Picture 1 (cartoon, rainbow, N blue to C red):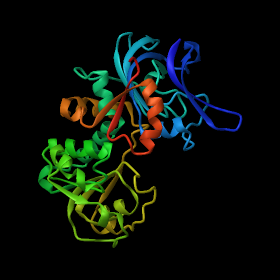
Picture 2 (cartoon, helix red, strand yellow):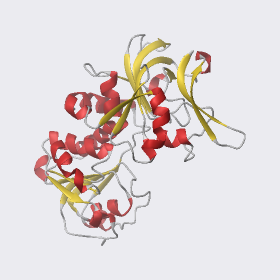
Picture 3 (cartoon, rainbow, N blue to C red):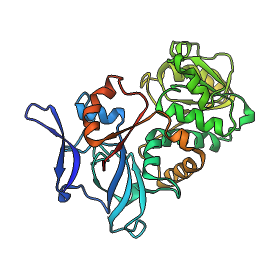
Picture 4 (cartoon, rainbow, N blue to C red):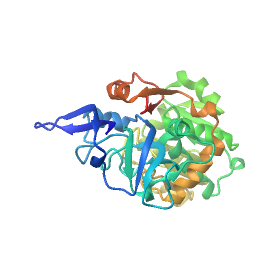
Length: 328
């Protein structure tokens, strides 16, 4: 038996969440069984636990979109017993049991070995947010973007992905401008490496198809009018990565930036990224994140506290990222 947050539906279709003991033979199929050390509590997990949105697509379900721990049993020689690993995405917490439990079983192809020197706590302090930010940074690198090209914009900069993007880009020598709706957090963003902090207001409104050329590159975590305006403000040959939808799923833009300025828009998929892309991202994160950055605005909870904290997270009462120590 092992402890887990288990989500079930009652006869009326309402979600019932409880911290309970689960038999090992209830674990889903997979080649690798993991003793989980740490997971996280993300917004999607909170929606699943509270039943506020139809996140879960298979019942019963263990929430938790990511996890880090040690291999307990394996039928894949690539991941022998005792290997430290991290797993994120692939529908965990939606279609496959996730990380908010003491034990997990997953397909071997979902797994990434933890980089040397990175602990399970480190990995989950970085979490899916830091991993997604690094995928964006590496995408800009593949497109040939260099610090000498000019200023780089990060939208949604106070969010988890945005904060990491600011720090990672600044660490690579870029002149970073952070866009946020919380200007009272400007000093925190500057401490992360932003040279300039701007209010998101003008970017979030409907704008012209082509605007003054400002940015050499951008990481957009927001979508909707913000992404459209960012594209409209790119310098000739600029590159934008799209990795979020905080403002909306829509993209009310025209083709003008792409056919008149040669702008490139790169989609970032953190859920089903290839094994090689995941390994490259986690290796880069091990080298480019400091203990201070990893622990920046991190709150640690137990499994029991995570169950209770889901509603607080939705209500905005918990700031920063939430790491869950499933063993405490």
